[in-house]
Length: 393
Image (cartoon, rainbow, N blue to C red; front, side):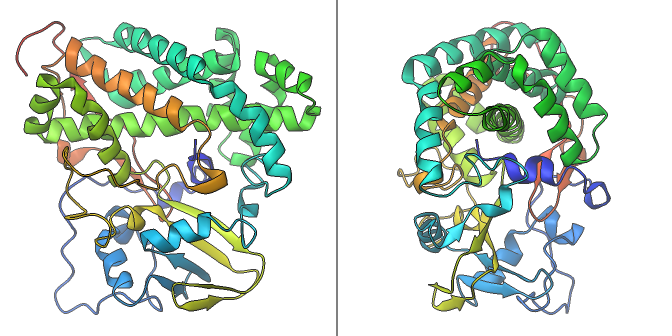
C-alpha cells in the first residue's frame, strides 16, 4: 500500500509528464560532466526517464547526499534506507499528512493503535478470499484486444478495493467521476472524503472507536493505495513478459516461479520509487549529519539496486537468493496491505500466462507511454492482443 504519496500528489504535475520507454540505460551526452549532488535535477525529464545512471553516480560519492537544487537529502543505499525506516522517532512521516494523517503520516504512539485496528482487515482469510476473487475478475476482463492499464489492471484493482472496503458499483462509478473532474489531489481528497461513508468499512471503523474524520481518512487511504499500487505493478509485470519471452516460457512451464518473478519486478520497478521523511532532530546517517527539519528522500529505486546487496542488480533473475527488497517499506510503516497487493498481482499475471499464454504487444514497445518524474515512474497505457485458450506462447 505504499503508493499513496506520489501516486496522486504528483498527479497535478502534468507539465512534468513525459513519454518514455523501458529501453537500456540512457547514453550520456559526449563530454558532459557527470552529475553531482550540487548540480543534478532529478525532475529533469531526461533524468526522470532513466534515473539509474544518476543514482549510481551519486552513490559513488556516498550513500547520503544533499541535493542542492531540491533543497533535500537523498538516501541511496539499502542499509541506510532501512536504517531510516527503523527510526521513525527521527525520520517522521509528516510529509504525507495531506494523503492520510491517521495512519500513513502518523508516528508512534498514535500510529501503533490505528495500525492494530487496520491490520485486522487484512487477515489471512481475507487475503485468500480476495485473491480468489481477483483471479475470477481477471479472467472475466480478458478480451481480444486489451489495454493492460485501463482495461485490465485498473478495473481489477478497483474491483478488489471495492470488495475490501465494501463499496457498491454506484460508488465506484462516483469515485471514477470524482477523479476525472479533480485535477488537483486536494480536490480529489475532498471528493473521496465525501463518498467515504458509503463504504461498509467506514461503519466498521467507527465501531472500532475511530471518529468520523479518522474513518474517512482511512477509507480514502485504502482506496488510493489498493488501486494504484497494484495497477502499476501489474502493468510492469506484463511489459517485462512482453520483452522477455524466455521469462514468459519459464513461468508458463513452472508457475511456481511466478512469485519470484513478481518480487523481482517489484524490486526493479517500485510503484513508489521515492518516499519522503522529515527529520525531527539532527541525525547521523551514512557518515553525514542531516540537520533537524530537513526533507529526506528515501530512494527505494536506488536501494533496491544496491550492488552491495544484489548481484547484477539491474537484472531480473528468477533464481535470485531471497534478499528482502524495500518496495513495501520496512519497520512499523511496512505496507499493511502488501500481502493483498501480491495476491492481486499474482492473480493478474497467472491469469494471462495460463488463460492467454500467446498474448502479444499490439504496439511497438519502444512507444509505450510513461509518466516519469523524480517521484513517479509508471506505464500509462500498454495494448496487447490476446488469443484465448491454451497453446504455446
